Length: 449
Image (cartoon, rainbow, N blue to C red):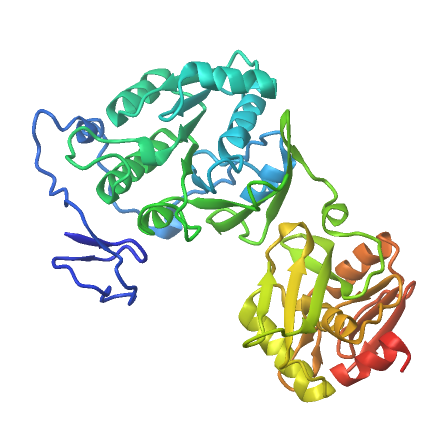
């Protein structure tokens, strides 16, 4: 069989382009397990004694709200949707050295101190290496057990014998089934091992966390079907050299996918950042700098937008953005040129969001336009000014979601001058709010000209 690493579809012959999703050079050869039973098929023999189930009527199924287990790390629990649910399977991805193993070892220690039996399985490091890290992190619980192996049959037998409360697999790419001829980390091994771990989690009602490597493109190494098989997918964002890390949920069957967790890497491990506005915000009033407010899940925090507009020295002008979609930046530049008569076609435009955060919230459009105008005109924006609004193609200012929540966060940070859309509905009266309909009204308000 040939397996598409982008969409997970299968085909019996190879081609340069996937017939389902259209991705180029994504078909990889793999063996297909047909279910033949033999003496060496230990991985499948583990599930031979599963009880026979019968279809049930949906209305006759009794459901009780499952109690979530708090890990003791609020940023991690919030990303999961409130805590750990029994039987859930979580895939945690991120670049090498970003802090995946560190975070899971800290979570394991916190859960072990609560009386939970935690089994940490490592296929990449020795007992001595993990012991050295645990001493640095201060992990010394009596309920935290370590088992170093890469053989799935041994891991499954250990789980069935010890019946731990939570299992950590570090990493899924290092695990292998001896009944399969392919090497660990291949498409076949990843698919089969992930499927078996999922069955163990559902059968024994044990939460299992799978740590996964990522490719150069930033996705979990292996086919997309791995993400489809698990309940929750978490990604670590941020540069490996940057001390601040962002944990984001891209899939969650038990909660919202808009939640994020923010951590700071220290010598003693990852520590929670309770106040993200301090991370992404500086109070210096510089040229080309503006302030907006983001909404990530249930939390609002301020972020600083930095823009630099300079004459293009050679060739075509550059359009570079860090943390923001470059196509959306091109759209906003076109709106500026069309409606404000500002000639940017001969200038390089660079955009940066402080703190290394990646943004898709349209509520930051107005602050981006203000930062670009400020850099182009070499004028600073008024102090303690916050801009909230989505910008349409014709230059109209559209309202953003949960305006009152964003204004409340801005007020707490001392921002008293807030510019929003004229169509926004807000009950805040303690700050100076100015409502505008079009981007043409922005320049006179900001620069008194």
